[in-house]
Amino acid sequence: QVQLVESGGGAVQTGGSLRLSCAATGKTYPQACMGWFRQTPGNGREGVATISELGEATYYADSLKGRFTISRDNANDMLYLQMNDLKPEDSAIYFCARAWGKYCGGVLSTGAVRFWGQGTQVTVSS
Image (tube, rainbow, N blue to C red; front, side):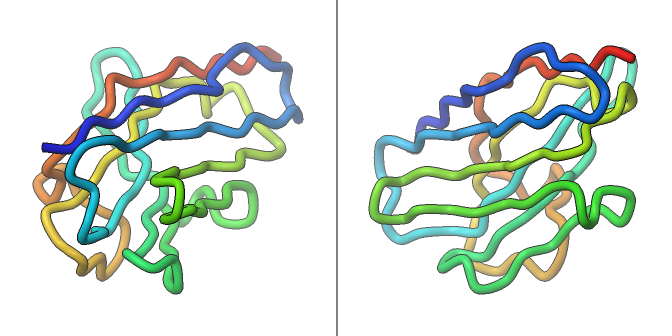
């Protein structure tokens, strides 16, 4: 089992920045593909960004490229999402996710996720 705990969410104004963190505990080795999702009320979870097991490959939802950056620190079992130039439509609950295996192949789908964090709220005001 792997436990994922997100932090770093909050309220910011349009154009602001936030850095989300996800701490992984439990049986984290071997490493796996990980990613971030977000969800708004009444909608399903949307893949935001994904990073390969060693961090050499990253994938982003097309609408977010250039504003969000995913990274990981395997030595400390941490996953990050740097979010810049935030917009009101970025408001959502953001979830950390760990895939079943090493292979990412693109932004993760919900079906590829084995473990979820509990989520952290991001609110962007205009």
